[in-house]
Image (cartoon, rainbow, N blue to C red; front, top):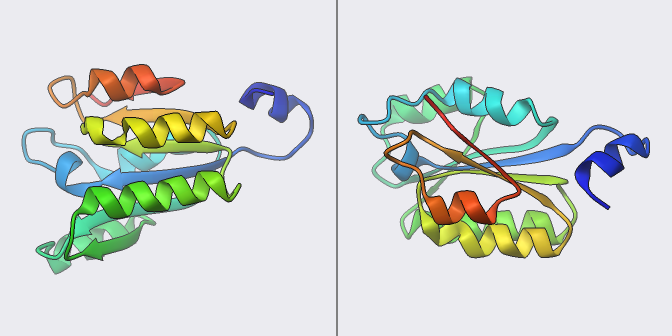
Amino acid sequence: MGLLDRLGAGNGPVRVGLFVDGPNVLRSEFDVDLADIRAVAGERGRLAITRLYLDENATPGLIQAAEANGFEVATTSGDVDVKLAVDATAAAAEGDIDLLAIASRDTDFKPVVEAAARRGVETFAIAPGEYGRSDALRTAAHDAVTLE
């Protein structure tokens, strides 16, 4: 049963899990606003998870701005990609979300998108810009958008 079928079945609003790869999206060459990412994902349903992943070098100002935009901030001393991938896969596997939205330009998340799709979770790739788009991630997802 697809996402639109579930919507029509009276199962309530689509629960969206938004996972943002901060180091790969919040770069000066993309000029991406967190509010725009949140808005694009929010058009797909109710944001059940809204999480921004940052490395340990993130500035307090960036963390505060993310929290002001409604993001839960996850910082890690290790690889941001690994933490995001584990959390996104867990959310899909545990049935916490109906739609997995990943904002990144990193092809490393293709297996996460594929695993979610195998579990019946719709997938949505958000690229930070034309230059920052991963064609493999976009192709693996059910739907994709490139921010301008």
